[in-house]
Amino acid sequence: MSQPPTKILLIEDDREDYLITRDLLEDIDAWEAQLDWASTYDEGLAAICRAEHDVYLIDYRLGARDGLELLQQAIETGCTAPLILVTGYRDHETDLAAMKAGAADFLTKGRIDTDLLERSIRYALERAQARDQLADANQQLQRKNQTLSELTETAHRFVDNVAHEFRTPLTVIKEFSTIIGDGIGGPVTDEQTEFLRYITSATRDLALMVDDFLDSSKLKAGSLRISRQPHSIKSIFESVRPMLAIRAAERKSAVTEAIDPGVGAVFADLEKAGRVIVNLAVNAIKFSPEGSEVELWAKPLDDGGVRIGITDRGPGLSEHDVAVIFERFKQVGDVQRASTKGFGLGLNIAKELIWLNLGTVDVRSTVGSGSTFSFTLPANNPCVVLASYLDRLGELDDPPKNLIACTVIAPAGGFDSDLLHDFLATSCRPLDLAIAGQPAGSILIVGPDNTPDGIVNRLNEAHVAALETRPEQTPQAISAESLGTFGYPSRRAELEQLVATHVREPQICA
Amino acid sequence: MKVLLVDDEIAITAALSVRLRAAGYEVASASNGTTGLAAAAEHQPDVIILDIRMPDIDGFEVCRRLKKDPALMGIPVIFLSANVQDTARQTALEVGGAGFHSKPYDAAQLIATIQSVAAGDQAAGV
Image (tube, rainbow over all chains, first blue to last red; front, side, top):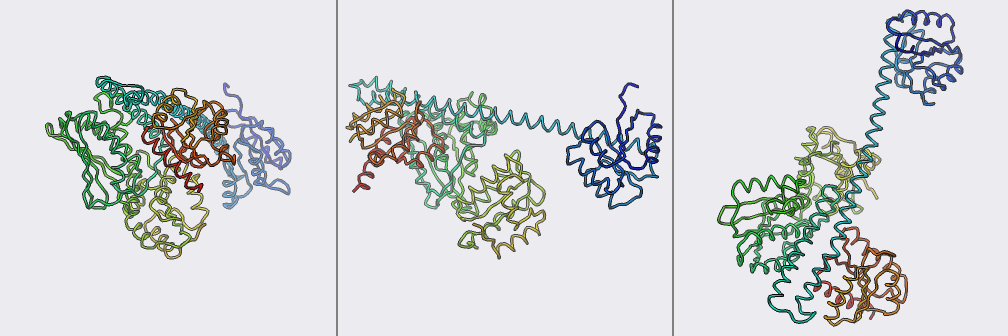
């Protein structure tokens, strides 16, 4: 026989039963069993602790104690070999208790024959082996995961460092070329001033690229922080005006501004929105003939949001180019291809920054009559912002799988009931999605401060946590559970009831 | 008005010195945290422009120590760093920084910040 014998220990206080079991095992043809016998509870436990056997058959009645207790104790001491409980009489409750305690099988004496015993042991061993393999694989995966996390961390630290190191020499080049250009170091000729302008312009491009490079790395890592606040379009335009004026002057062009009177405040990250405008406008200036005009405009949207656009009088894009640009937008990771046509990393980053600002991007163009690149920003209205945010969750490649847990935490001063009502009304569609089993949601936390900023930042935290760790480990999930006020509603009716209850009787949480 | 520059990159302090002197400031400089602290005590500048990443003591720690020294705590500190992460801006505020500019900086904007923090400080001192 090629296989070594399967070592079995019978823990049984009745010699007669031992002999029966031995006979049954001897009749097995498929494999060889080697049976040992322990006649008391303590002797059995000691043998289990030595872990010398492949499988254990435990009698239910062992003097004053029972086999179930032994089984539990064996598992507590770390026994991983299969334990099969054997009883004198059939009892469903003991069977269930044995199963719950971790028994591999439950057999009734008198009903056991060689076939049944052989199959029970074989299946138990097979399952134990599969479980061990699974545990091994799991451990390996965890180790690999750990290594990958460390590698990613190292890569991002590297990018951060490189970007940091680039900035210092860039600063020196830019500063000294402007110092010379400004005549601080002595008189300069007009020709020299023009040469210096090329240096400063190229340095600015390089500085923007370093910013894009850093943002691109952070975007991939999901660590690009976004700080959305209410802003007027005027203040956003003001923040980019000096930069755009410099870039336009380099090509003797001009950037005009037009804000529609119906435009209201938006809820956005000012710096990111500004970066997008600069990226799009710099492209527009670059591709327009020298001395032309580029228009920066803002128009209101139906939902109170704003569309910001840059219209140039450049050569325009063919239908194919427009399609290709959108393709590029999708291929955020494909830096090589994206940069081949001179659109640069900037356009990809712009698209991502717009996405982070809960907006959408659009391009309209006709060959010969210029292009218009535009993007939207949400209105400074919590309902609109939340709806946009929830739409985003649904669009993710790998959205959080857990159902929406709608945790409503009251602010110290009580609910702004109108606001909450609006929020619930507006967010019905994404909630429907989640209830239909679509992975649309994460954990919503409203309050304690019902400001749009507070809500969205909380959403961001919940969303990021849900993506990065197992949902049940997120602080939000833990707090939602420990509050005990909300479960994870799986049906719309449950959700409505939960929300209705808690909107009327808010839980006050510190 | 006297400005102290603390940066380990000599080319940066050189560029800023030229720029600020041309704008009418008196300028002193130091090339690391330790000498920066000593220079602050010696020159009693009106404003300190402080780098973050330096070989001995980082700018945050330099600022913390300045804010603990009764003789120096009133001098406004403007951080000037190539580190543009939000956490850096946040920490700059926490340690008592009055301003933050990233490299490459815009000279006109930096000078405007110097003017405003110096004015704010004088107003607060009155």
